[in-house]
Figure 1: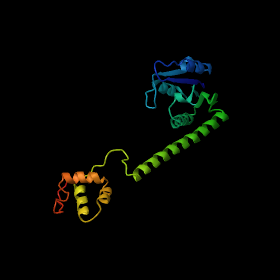
Figure 2: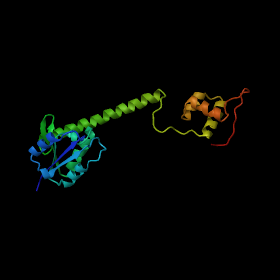
Figure 3: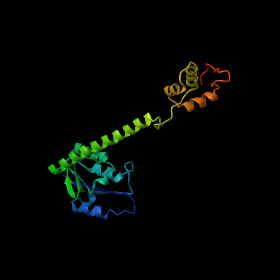
Figure 4: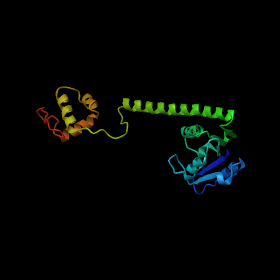
Amino acid sequence: MEKLIGYSRVSSRQESDDRQQADILAAGVRRDDFYVDQGSSGARASRPQLDRALAALEPGDTFVIASLDRLGQSTQNVLAFAEHLNGRGIELRVLDLGGGDVDTATPTGSMLFTVLAALGHMEHEIKRERVLDSIDRRRKAGKNLGGRPRVISNRQIRNASRLIAGGEPTAEVARDFGMSRATYYRRARLLGLLPDQSGRIATDASSN
């Protein structure tokens, strides 16, 4: 028998779910089929009651929530969840979406989620372009892009010193080896590879 499964999430112990509960029960969900997670917030938070609600759903059932923010904090997460339900043959009903009740089982509700999916994809692409633009600007400005620093071996410092001794510009050599000129000078000084007063550079072939 097809049934309604309700779910609500309360982000803190102090937050009351009375309004959510009243709306979901008024939509026809039985109390025994209503699941509530207390004190859960954020995409990575444990939601045992949501897991129980999903386990109770069968093809043909409808999953009822008060609003989309009870499922996740991003459009992408919510849409992925809706697609997951659709793949299982389960409908999603949102009691307050844009001021109205939306059910993916209806043509209007299905169209709305299609529009949301398009907007979610666009949101993802915009964020991606912004990240790529930021990386490109930082790279052109010679700034650190973050992440784990590259390890420069003593052998690389010695090879760089040989190129510099041969007349290659220090800045270009340092850049080719993936380090700043200041880093090269600091490491070369520690290895005794900087020119002495006679202009000679040590060429010890030993590695790090």
